[in-house]
Length: 70
Image (tube, rainbow, N blue to C red; front, side):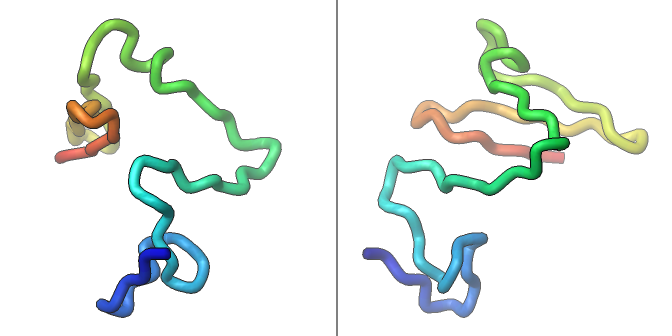
């Protein structure tokens, strides 16, 4: 089991990090839409998202993780 020592729980209960390579299971209310990454990305590795007049780049890393940059 991995524990954070910097006081940041990292979005998981009790400050416990999930094992490497495993996604955190989130409890999503039934009225919140869920969009699969494959629907957003198609055959691409990045997409540009416009929000409040700014552009953000959401990309898939070579390790399959998602990174959002402004």
